[in-house]
Image (cartoon, rainbow, N blue to C red; front, side):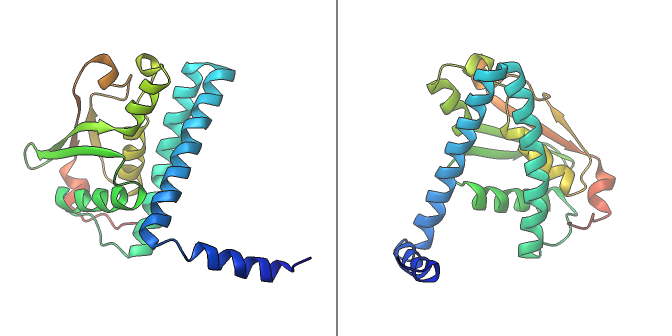
Length: 189
């Protein structure tokens, strides 16, 4: 029988054949596959209402943890403006799944911006399994976790609810910040 160190060395050799970008894409696909199966399993056993509530809670809490980890790993500076936050958001999305969403951001004054989502992996997946009309957005629950982790005070409109795209509406969220939470340069965690 081959020893564990020898097996690990062989495994690492095989894994090294994957270019970093392909390895990253594979990890993201595996995580998204887990996420979808977890949601489906909870919905089947406990009902869609419970699955939605737990998904939003978990996504929000995951957003807080991942924002803190990414900020520390990259030594990102304090968030002192909406532009600073939007840069952090782009970094988070760029690391966690740049191909999962197609969206644009539009400024709406000195203290607010809007996110217009054209394509969303969550909407695509819940549509594919036939539960889109019951799905409540978990994507923006994650974003609120990022905002909370960064110490930003904000108002989001509309509040998290059923998937806007599934309702035939534009997926459009407005975030309005309390200027004080930006101007004092809240230290990144």
